[in-house]
Length: 94
Image (cartoon, rainbow, N blue to C red; front, side):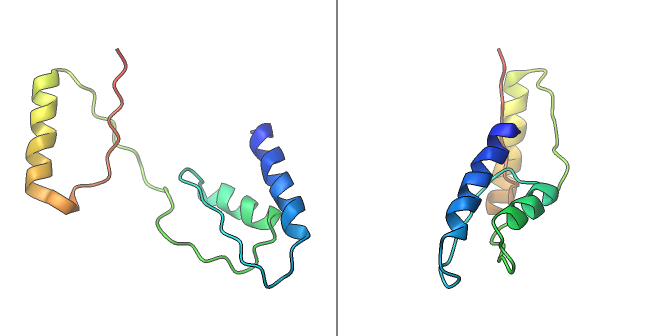
């Protein structure tokens, strides 16, 4: 957390030197609403435009009991839903 705060502080120092008509793009894949608000404040982003989704949704954890069945279930759902299949991260710890 301290490292992130320090990094954002450095970016804030740089942005304070820029002209007001200079556009800034801030990208993240992990910011919560609270973090988003803090970053906007530190970077003095008064009217930011958010493109995409903020990750304020519950994560579904599906424990894998049998690898074969697990993969078959995902393949079946993916075939059925195609592009509507939700974004998914599969993490396997051996």
